[in-house]
Length: 257
Image (cartoon, rainbow, N blue to C red; front, side, top):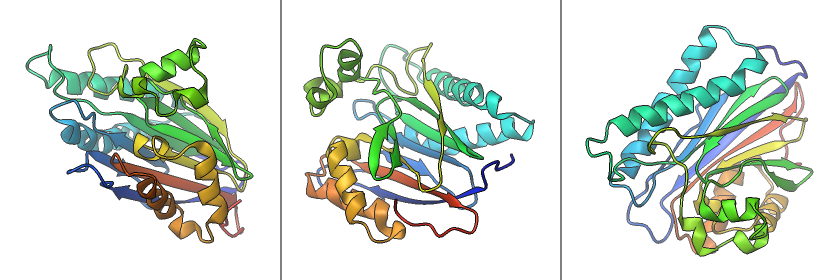
């Protein structure tokens, strides 16, 4: 697809077990040269959270690539991502022989870069942030009870951070059909960054704390690791997965902004 604004991008990522968990059920997809990125967090209460997140980062990029190969306009992309997330969730649900028990479950947040836009889709409480001029803007809604309480004005965003209802996930990959992922189209400017991350990041660090790490970072190459280190220093209570995508003009140097 044509890069209308002559933007180029670079991505770095980090996957970490954290300080408290015995295993890592997070997974991510961030291959060099690919314009599609995925973070998936295995649902801890499911029996096969790790297997689910592995399937998400394996099957979703292949499915989306297949649809793009058929030809698609930018206007088609939100529906493509939504449809593929739904199809994958339904496929994983059908793997469970006992439909009454939660055997498979994972969150997903994914981003497809197309020219000067990023198309983001998500299901669960893994997040996408836009970073512009050093300020974070959350571009996804948390599909948990805390997010629902924020939506209906029962909690503020600040009150929801660390609230017990954050642990009550309402939507996820592998849930009983029909799941309802959400999609957003983000206009990108040179100097912007996108952050995709699991709750091992945003459950440990408030937005201002992530902004502080970004402000102190001197090299884009280390920014994902720096945020991971800060998440662990704040407690590291969960697995950590993060992808940071930085946009610049063609011929411009990739710097923090």
